[in-house]
Length: 176
Image 1 (cartoon, one colour):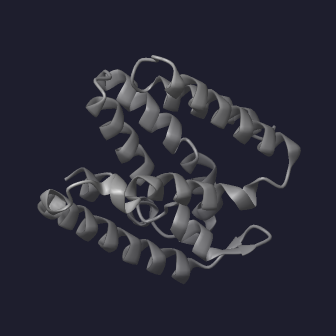
Image 2 (cartoon, rainbow, N blue to C red):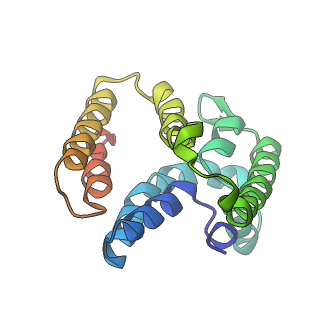
Image 3 (cartoon, rainbow, N blue to C red):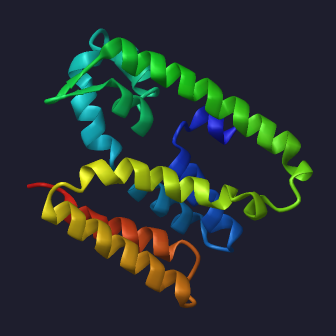
């Protein structure tokens, strides 16, 4: 149900990870909110493209995720509305369907790590992050966030703290 109602994979993974590791609901929510803070500037960039009544923009805005935005981005601050919506619909349907398949068929996979599935989520974020590292400040924020996350994971930090601390450090890359 979470996949169908909250189409935000990173927030879902963070919340499930934090709760599964014994973290508090508050830590899970903070981690999810910090990870999804990136949607504020993304939302501002797509607002002119969505157009229409507020309720229509609200509904279409639910289809805006990292991947649909990247597919619709034409460069120079312009976005292709049809690509944004089309990619969002395809991604949403694939996300919900694959979550259902995973929930129903999870018992068939004895050890997902043996298949390398534990690397899929970090690999996706690295692929999305790489083109954004053109400026020193952004690269420094990414390195700092990664360092904090690694340090917190190597120590006995409370569940959720590595995600919260790393996301907070990455805010240093925000332009003024």
